[in-house]
Image 1 (cartoon, rainbow over the protein chains, first blue to last red):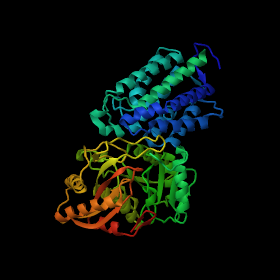
Image 2 (cartoon, rainbow over the protein chains, first blue to last red):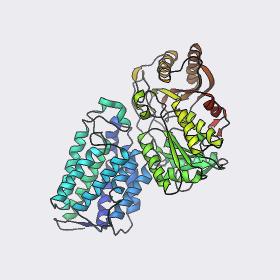
Image 3 (cartoon, each protein chain N blue to C red):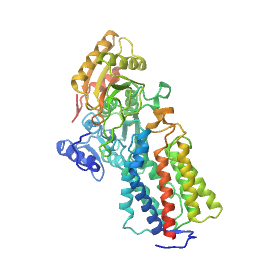
Image 4 (cartoon, rainbow over the protein chains, first blue to last red):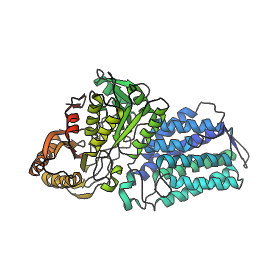
Length: 220
Length: 329
């Protein structure tokens, strides 16, 4: 697949490819995520994410999609229905929550991407009752969403927006090291969790990073 | 750790197949999800429990008469998915509503809550009691943050008996809530269990070390110390438990000594003997004692002590008949 470097929008089939690529990267990173989670959690984050994206692949692979909404919804539902645990609902909502009230879209540009993940962030906060600084995936998602919004308001190209989101997510992962956990099994560690990054935030960063990689490769 | 498994990704599926073959006379499988329900359902409030796999015989082992009507089974140490809980609840609902009972862990809360939302569209009314018996897992000011461990058993027992009596969903929920408030547990870890998929231990402890108050997934407890004789260890645990439960002489309790996986019945009975001695010295009456492995974490070493403080209502529910593969009364 080739497209112009200044690509501004993807169709549903391309979005499907991009998410499948992100899933591959998450699965490749299963040992890394397990290691990150084992330091302060119960060590099953990599396993769960891998189960989730295996299901996503199954449900996205040989299907035709006409709207972005369907691709995101199928991705989210696959995760919610296969993973279990807190991350099943939370990462499922990262894809489901954003399209719940979104008008049917056939193209994904920086503006739509920002709208989707902004709504996802809201939905995750409501469901998980967590905020920035609680040592959860929100520590990466919120700055990433801010990056997307900023890019969208500057009418940036999709690739620029994803680059900004990735950069901010990476910074968020780094910041999560300093936080004391308020949720999950790391909570009972208190100060002892400081110095370790959050596994969920790490997954968010990998997802944005691999979406950027896919688009960059596809744009060549 | 050596484990008798096939492909690690299939452990839950293959375990469920084995359970269904063993208990085909009393269980039925819920189509399309990892859920099991009683074969013969009654016209009453239904009790649905569940949680991650790896803690057998909980939770499937308490599906039976006078106990839970259905169980939603998650992956190893991971909460069951919302659609699993939804399908199980729909399968057991007689129209009188469904009470969810599960240990208070972030993943379980998220998934059961999402299931409750989905069930509103199916016109199934649900209520929830989150079990919070582990006294070490949060200070008393944040009692609602405490985790659920072996005390699940007592709470489900009371709920099942209340439902069997034909009470309304509201009344069954209130009785269950009361049972949870009266249930106090504390555990100790000697050695970790292993996650079948990764082969990794859930925590690490030196050979001569134990951790008082550690959670069943290796959540940190109150003190890491050298191994000590059974009586000394039991005294330390009971001291904390009695302090938390504010039990006084003439109170009446049920006792559960629960093994976590690899600690032997021999050891559990030694602990039980000491627990009984101390309660006796304090003038606390023991109504019943159960020494068993209900809430395990694979081959984790250690045990927990649970006390259920009785009143006349809870006592009647506790004594009511019950019959499930791993619990009979």
